Length: 200
Ligand SMILES: C[S@@+](CC[C@H](N)C(=O)[O-])C[C@H]1O[C@@H](n2cnc3c(N)ncnc32)[C@H](O)[C@@H]1O
Image (cartoon, rainbow, N blue to C red):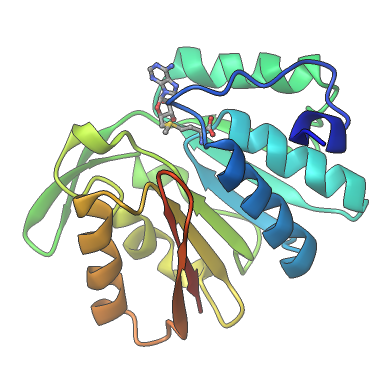
């Protein structure tokens, strides 16, 4: 059965090279069912936001999803996508346009979201899904995520990085492992573009 049918979607998903691939979507659904995250943060909105929300709605418990995007038009597209599937509830879901800025970390300058946008009203992120910023913005563009959100990553937090077959993402995972002794395990997600599952 297609994922659209399983999640009760009204419209077909436009699977192309930008959103997560279908196999990865199935992995995300499985992780949400088994891990039961309450506070979810997503970098790079879109199809993945819809998959996450529809799974959570089927499970039926209370949650928050805070999804960031550096492209204002794209975040409006995501909002329309969610509205068209009756999946946009402002009490649970925040879509945040966060423009790309220079961010200096350990002497390197990254092109990343505005770190000032990353203050939450909860203590722990249960699931951090990283699928942005766009890889080409700078070398290791997704590296800053853990540095910026470190205070919300605690025992039991799950971090999922998409596109982990790329050389930048392979390097990022190694950097994170070296800098975060709290990381307990790292697993490979074996899909077309690949992923890394990082357990705190
Ligand atoms: C890999 S995409 C994120 C995809 C998202 N997680 C999903 O599953 O749909 C990373 C960023 O690329 C940008 N983007 C997404 N689709 C795009 C498109 N078709 N053309 C240009 N930029 C796009 C958005 O700003 C997005 O946050």
